[in-house]
Image 1 (spheres, helix red, strand yellow):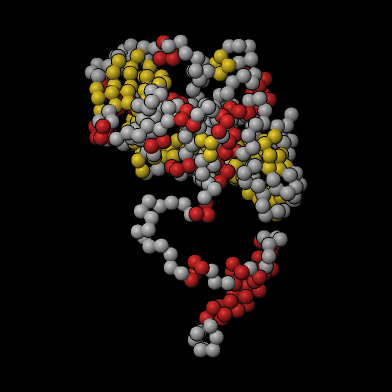
Image 2: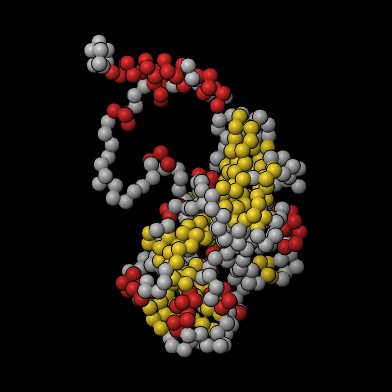
Length: 426
C-alpha cells in the first residue's frame, strides 16, 4: 500500500507517470516525430521485470559478457570464400560498433593454419641471422624491456578485395570488416633487435609465426627500427588466442599479413625472404600482367557504417546520424566528406574522438532525412594529402585482377523505406 493506505503503490506510480508525461507529450513529439506519446508507452507507465526482481550478483559472471540483447553482434565468416575455415577469415561487425576501439571478442580473424594454442611458459622468441649474438627470449625476458601502449588499426590486404570486379557482398561487415583497432601493449622491436646487435649487412627482418602454417613475412629494417612492436596485450588484457597469444608482431600502417601472430623467430638478413624464395604472394596483379610488389602501406580509406545494408534506417523520416570509419597507413585522417546523392554534392563530416596516427577515426554527419532515396558515400583525406579514390579511378590505373589494396569509395543505396544495398554508380 502507498502512504495514504488506500491504493497499491504500483497503481499510484502508473497514474503519477501518466499525469507527468501527458504534459510533456508535445516536447516528446517535437524531438521524435512519429513516435507514440510517452504517456501511452507501457515501457514507461508499467513496472518492468527488471524493476521488480533482483538481478545477478557480482560473482555470477567472473568474465563479463555482452548483454543477451546484443547476441547478433558477432564476427561472421562467408563459407564460400575459402575451401576450409582453418585457412580463412571472419569479419568484424563494423555496422554494430561505435567509437574507434574494437572489442577484443569482435576483432576479425585471419588464419593460414588455424589458431595455435600455446603455453606462454613454453614459448620462446629467437633472434638469429646477421646479428652479433643470437638470442632466445622467454615471455618473462620480453616483459623486462620498457613497455609501450599504442592504438593502431590492423587491416588485411584483402579487405574489400571482392569489390574489385563490382558490388559483391551486401553489408559493410563483409565488404570492409577485415579491419579492427585496439590498444596494443608490448615492447619495441628495435629494443629486441638492438639487444642482439644488428650487423651492417642486416637490411631486413624475417618474422616467423609458431602456427601450423609457419606464417612468414619480411619487414624492411627501416620500419623495424621505427615503430614496430612485439605485443603481448590488447585493450588491457592478454592477446586472445586467435589474435596471436602469447605474442604477435605489430607493424603500424602496413598490411595485416605482416603482423605475424604467435611470433617465434626474428631472422636478420640482407634481402627479403619473399625475393629469396621467388614467391609472388601478396602482390597486386595489374591489367598488363605485371604485379605491384612490396605494397605494404594501407592506403587512405573510409566507409559509412550506418546506415548500411546491415544497419537500415528504422525510425523513418527525421533526424538521422550518418556514422562511419576512416583510416590511413600514412598517419592521421585530416578530413572526411560525405554525400547523399552519389557524389554530386559533398559535405564535410565531423571527426569525433581521438585522431591518432595509424588508428581508426570515427566520423559523423547529422542531417534531416525527408524519406527520399539516397546514394551514400564517404571520402577520406590523410595527412600526406592523399584523397580516397573512386573505384572507377582505381580500376583505370590498376585494372581489376587483384584482390588486394582496394581503397575505393563505397556506395550504399538507401531506398524510401530506409533499407540499404551495396551498389556501384558510374
